[in-house]
Each structure stands twice: as C-alpha cells, then as structure tokens.
Image 1 (tube, rainbow, N blue to C red):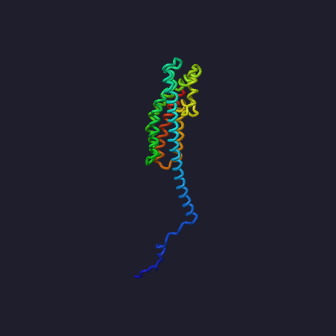
Image 2: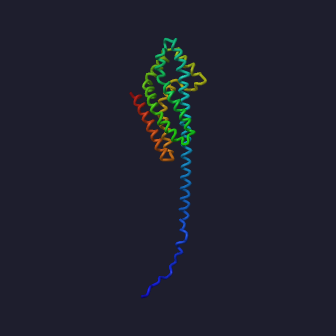
Length: 236
C-alpha cells in the first residue's frame, strides 16, 4: 500500500503580525478617544461650575432672608409694641413663616457648602437635596399659604400708616439692605424653588456617570414634588 505524503505546507503566516487597519481608521479611533476625553472633562468642569452656582446662589438667598429678618421683621416687631396702627398681629401676618424658612435654608446652605469638599460632591449635593426637601415642603407650604394675606396686609399698612411707610423708606437706606424692596424679599422663597429645579436639570444634562444620573434624577423628582405642592397651594 502506498501512502501519499502531502507536500510541506507554508505555515509562516501563523507567525506573521496581524495586518494593521487602514490609517484612516486609526486616525478616526484616535479622534474619537480624544473627543470622548474632551467631552468627559468638559462635562465635569461644567458640573463643578453648576455646583458652585448652587452654593453661591444659596448663600445670596439666605443672606436676603437674614436681611428680611434683621432689617425689617425684628425692628417692626419692636415698634409694634407701642404702635396702635401696626400691631404685632399685622407684623406676623406680613412676615408669615419666614423665620422657619430661614432656619431650614440656613442648615441646607451649611450642608451644601460642606458638600464641595466631599470626595463625590455631586452625589453629596444630590443627597443633601433628598435630605432637606421634606423640611422644605413643610416650611414652604406654610409660607405660601400665608403669602396672599401677607401682601394684602403689607399694602394696607403702607397706604394707611404713615409711620409704617416712613419706616420702610428709612430702612431702604440701610447699608446692609442693597436695592431690594420688601415685596421682592417676601417673594424670594417662592422664586427659589424653580431655581433649584433649573440647576439640577443643568447638572443632569452634563452628568458623566450612571450613578450621578440616578441620584440627580431622585433629587430633581424630590424638588419637583415640593414645587408642585407649593404651586397648588398658591393657586387655591
């Protein structure tokens, strides 16, 4: 019996390097990597700008609440003791629950400021929103329920008490006061909630991970729930 011995095969291709992809593909892949890196760091920088804006705007808001209390509420409360035109009941009606709002937001601001030094500041700030929105819902709901009556009483006092009108005019010269009017200070808590929504949406737009996206969505849903409750009370 004869055996057919196969001719020796060339197996050198097994040891040859894999062919390189075309230069165009290499350049495209390199560009995509650079673009993704640029996009990631660009989004991260934008997120930190927004985080700083959240904290800085909260500082300004809390300062305005302090102005409301120290430049207007406290002096008026002292004056009302000896003033029959503007008694303590009217003063309480004008300022409503602003003291509670200030207490909640002062604590919230302190928490936000601490978040900036956290290992994951974005998650820390989102967690702070989740922690404080239940308190905001209570304090802001009580504040807005009194808001219409507050403005009515303020207008009545301004028109019917010369002493009250003179007091407001004098306090507006206070160096700590700035250019804000008393009505604009009184409406600032109502305007603050939509600002939170806007800033959280901006953070979400530039989110760089699934984890931050998830916790920011939770924080946004929580503040939207507070806004919905407050808006419903304002419309009643």
